[in-house]
Length: 390
Length: 142
Image (cartoon, rainbow over all chains, first blue to last red; front, side, top):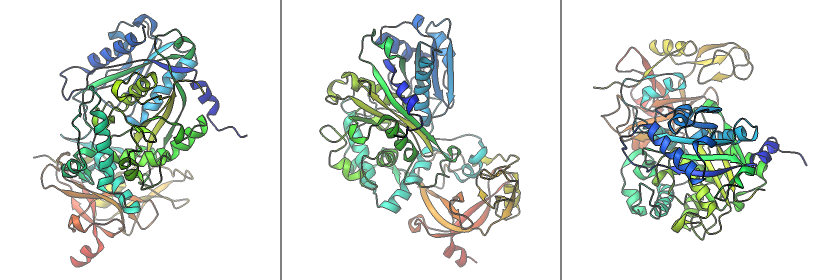
């Protein structure tokens, strides 16, 4: 049998695991620095797994602006000799790379214990672009037209999907309604008030075909996770969440508007790689933390990962197949749409919590595998966590 | 008063803006294999050949479009809503330009409709930007 490219490294990845998780509160306006919030999340993640600053020798994060860097945060929590520090430029597309980079640092012996985090402060808001703007690169062809923020990029995709497959506002709304219902059981979520499809349809247009409830809830906050070897994980308090495999994909230089088929996203490339590398498929997944900067991101990536056919996502959600008692529980925490926008790092927190069986009244019974996707449009990644190795 | 984002041309894109200033639409093309490139590149991404800017017809089809209602971007905080589309030029499948859509009611827009380039001064600077209108509207306005 031909070996899938990347499969050797992916078999190695499961010798690393997430052993600790930590986070701050998610609030609209914290009045705090990103350094303070990242330090709090890192401390919480280490305390969660019974480790201290003295045990940590690696730090990594991703971001595009306004984020405290790995060496700063390590210093702030008392790490004196940080052996490995990696700051990755990117947004939701790069979360998988951040986590797998931490894992490979551990597996290659560059670090023993790595903290990976993401922090967002009030100075970092992606939904608006105000002030004097000089648009460089491919943005110079789009920004002058008043087209330069993520809700615009991905509503453009949604329109094309509606044109080709007849998907509707009600289909997008079914995703928003389901995820809000999940968030209503999550005390950490910022959007906990249950909404109906009528509430969704009555919400104001942001960028037609997107309404308010199609868009993520931008917040201040931080999430940190601790990654170490499976060997070391045995001595730590919680059941490890093993990294069973991962895959990334990038096309069109990351240009959201050059992506060829806007009824799909990066997941068109990522999903087959991930399934081949792990030997798993959609039927094997108990929890799906789908990256959801917008409802349509869930729709396109859910189709690409093979949970259902093109144009069927609305029915899938309406029939209860994306929630408890259905085929797979999608974003039990409420996702970026309702828990809050920690750029997808909060999906990793939730996945680990679910595999440990610690998600309290939103626990997915018997959860053993969790898919976590990251990104939208032309680039992104995904990984699978398991409560046991393959 | 705020102004729209201004283009920041570089060595690879400067000829595009020189052409629009003269009321022409020119796109970057490989002089060896003929591939059109958007965004522009110094060398062809397929064959590595030298590139140059060449005139295009300025006609294409509307791949997708949005209608922005929320005030989110400098220069576009009033006179809402406005429509932005992606026009695929006839010269090559996938040769796309993002563009404001003019000369049409937003309720009349549909994917795949035929579009024709026009040019407008971009407030706040010296740039002229290509915008697109449905072909019927362009004809009606001569």
